[in-house]
Length: 262
Image (cartoon, rainbow, N blue to C red; front, side, top):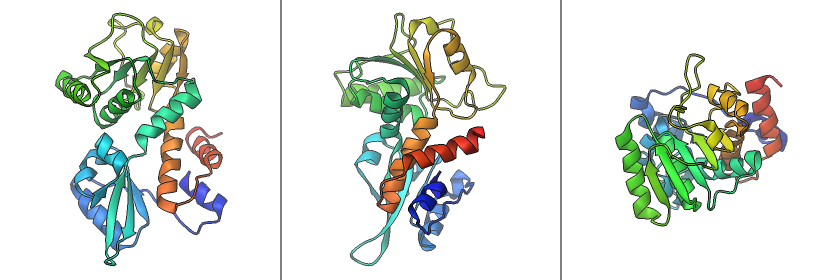
């Protein structure tokens, strides 16, 4: 999507993908800096690790405690420094509005997952003034840790660990369950029925329909996968790295063509 955007704007830029072992992340960032890259995007499991590997965090990275975009800039002393940003949180909110027409203020949300993506999502949902937030994670202590953090930062939000007994407005999957064909659903339907919600959002975009989304459609829910969030976070990263507004429609067509062959 980035290369399609560069071409659309006539920029002589190139975007490359590199697989980096977490133990080599610092060396990879320093290598990119030394080779005069404009910047980097990071995916799991690097987003949390990178917080301590950049020279400066912008407001978004400080707020959400994760870095998915690094921009290399030249300071007044002539030295290059690395500024970390997070474009995921805003992209999630934009995508929920665009794909499901959900404005989060005052809503009840069940969030599945307490890893890096789950933590960022939970904090952003609280910042958007949801009325109630229910956190479910395989490791309960992680969910409890996030709940404690939200209680301190956003005391007006009612937060619980575990499945709700009543209906919610949205179920949001921030786990990786669904990426592999053999994966089951991240939702325990013995504890929560999809009939108890009107909308389900899965951050996974490949496959286009996870088992969770198939079940949600069958239950009559509005559904969306994570392709909108992918494009929106990419568009925000594009603006940070190039200083130019991203051609979002071009980027989305490129992603859909690559992922779904359409």
